[in-house]
Amino acid sequence: MNYSDKMDVLDLIIETLKEHEKTLDELAFRLENSLNAKSPLRPPQNENELESWR
Image (cartoon, rainbow, N blue to C red; front, side, top):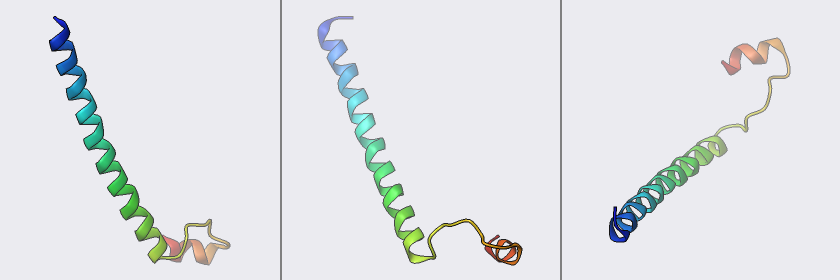
């Protein structure tokens, strides 16, 4: 494998990682918005709250 081939492989890996980073950022943003729209996640305080939480 020559230098040019190695650079092409590295470029492909970097581009793939960038795409996954964008996807993960979008998913994290959507999850954060979804959680902020509802009550924040916290452990249930009593047994009745546990049932309604499920």
